[in-house]
Length: 270
Image 1: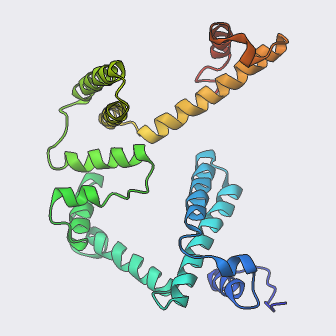
Image 2: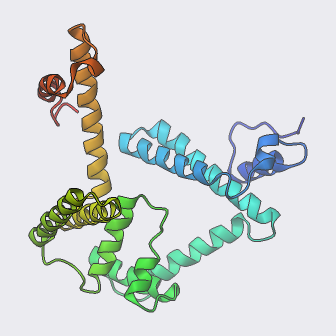
Image 3: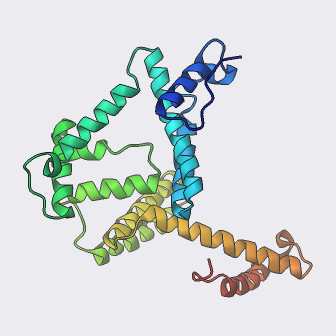
């Protein structure tokens, strides 16, 4: 048994010590086996769960999920410290320095009257400190681990800074129509590789349209998926109420139930 002082309230130093003990020879077999790579997906899952708590504005849940995210940070720092790469203090030091450097309008004599000026300064400083010499460098620097829609929207936004963009949402939507036609052509040819390519182009064009409309594509698709799920559930309940089984009905009959479900599940009720 590992000895650890019981307290009414713990702090960051306690969390770091707990993780160190979990990784010690007397600690937890599972924790001792973990690497940066093995817990990579855990980090993603905890971040998404924290975001869900934020979306729900559930403060107790947010507190819990932020703690889970913090655990991931501390765990990775512990692993790096064992490898003599860096530690938690080094992470704190680097982010503090980054915030000071990127806020010269707060910690220096640069003037920034509004959010637009702040973001412009931020981008310029970020480009300089990261050694990004070209606009293409800024596109390559967008994390490839981001969800595809979010990454596409960010890449499009950065390309726009170099003037590579549509004039407006209408022009972006015209591209959606053009890409749709190209996808239809690929489908008619039965060319699998081209269908994948054209579908990707169509999705990218949709994201560009969303960006020009001021819509977050990732969030829009999330809402659409939630709406579909709710309407599917309502459809299933209507089918069950009639003593029937969904797979046995066929799409035409299911569409009748779906129409009823749409009346029940409007955007206002979701």
